[in-house]
Length: 226
Ligand code: DC
Image (tube, rainbow, N blue to C red; front, side):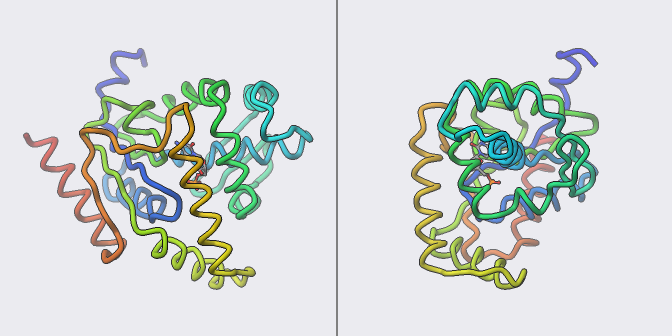
């Protein structure tokens, strides 16, 4: 498929801060429409994981970018594979979330991942979740959603999620981590977390996941029938 054909494939961009519910909502929207799903945060997590394995410091921009160039990353259903190994659980830790946020500040790494992300745009459509989907990677997305919630709401959700998985959880630490991650994601020079001018703001503090999914589906139908 050439670039101009690919550009006609509809994209729904769902951006927002950590633990806003983006992942679950985006996956359900993709399922409802039969669209492909891109979890761009997972790409940054895989890079953080691979860099750590290779003893590369997360602050070394060029070494991190070079490491990313040689990775064989595969998404199959909800599993993530690195060089044939299932690393789905390993990249979901708080440590890799922090590492992802640190490697993601490097413009050189972000440049390496642009084409990787564009390749997910496949017929009949794509739901892409991240921080810069609507602003940088898919600026022509037919629908852009900025999904967010108060930091305390997000910390509470992450806390319950960890308890549900029988993992150690401390609310105060989680809150502090989220604040640090938000500051880094919003404050970086390259593709910072900002709401696209043409995005629809969806605050999920008082919304269930299925209510958020329905709002997005309605907005999408409205956009394509305009
Ligand atoms: O969505 P997540 O928690 O899996 O993302 C982990 C980190 O990756 C996040 O703190 C910032 C970075 N990220 C990014 O910079 N750009 C994206 N499109 C997605 C994630």
